[in-house]
Length: 306
Image (tube, rainbow, N blue to C red; front, top):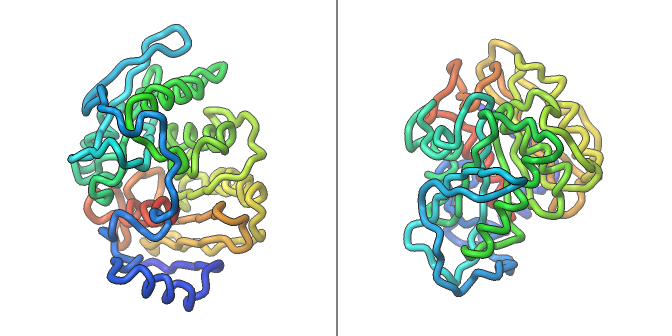
């Protein structure tokens, strides 16, 4: 059983929002409605909105930095070329692949596709799984950030994207790459979700701008490094400093804290769990579980507040 330490939104406001939105699924439900209140805000439509797309599901190749770079694209069923879609980039871990992210096959095929977010999206989101060089994200000379820049240009020249709702997430090396984008592209990405990043191994160019920041880290997984990375965005986002509670080893639970005092639209959420270097933690049992993990639901609530 988790304990959410949410310090920024009074319960009365949450209740009023629920009444206004009428019939919305409860926030604690992992399969909550794909579109939350933030989705009602005016979208920033990419130039391709209204035109027939040429990109479809599957693996695609672009040129970036003088070399071929691959990515897997997943377009929502019933794609509407006049609707600006949320865009989520899922980065694989060291030794993993874009296929692993797109299928979820290393934990539970389909159920854990795109870190378990695809099954929650209900065709509200364009998902992309980029492929790293040598199955990693060393970002030598900034080449992986450049790849992401080129990838976004290609996608948004062809698909109807809400450019105010771009997100990046990943586990381990993929978490480090998402962190690198938070540092170097805070005005490009609305938010990031960083799972078990082993440090700033993909770099942190810039690193002074605010960006919505979610992180999950196991208490047995060099959690001091995760805290340090988190605290950069606690400062950048103007949040009140605190030492959020974390579960004891052996408790088999997680604790999620939303920081208070953050700049508007730039929240920081920290999810600490009793476990090690894993990507799909569950309460009440050790190890990964595609169907029982609480992490996709926590991440999806974070993303869909915008």
